[in-house]
Length: 77
Image 1 (cartoon, rainbow, N blue to C red):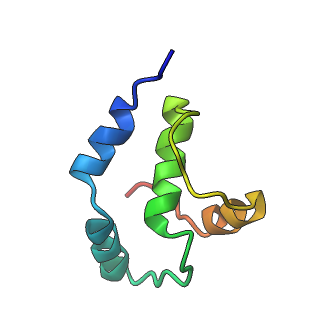
Image 2: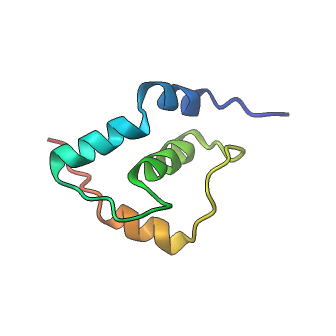
C-alpha cells in the first residue's frame, strides 16, 4: 500500500526553498551546506512528524542531521 504524502505536499506548496532562504537571510543565518540545506532539514522534521518513510529524501549521514539540527534555535518568540 502506498502512503499518502499529503503533509509533505502541503509543505512544498506553502513553503518554497526560496522563502526559507529569505527567512534565513532575514535572521542572519548563513547556510554553509551545499547538499543538506535548511529546507532539507525542515523536510526531515516534517517527514518525522508525519512518519512518511516512503518520501524520498537525500541520503545523508546521521551526524550531518545532528550537526545541522544542533544550531536550530527552538525558542518560540
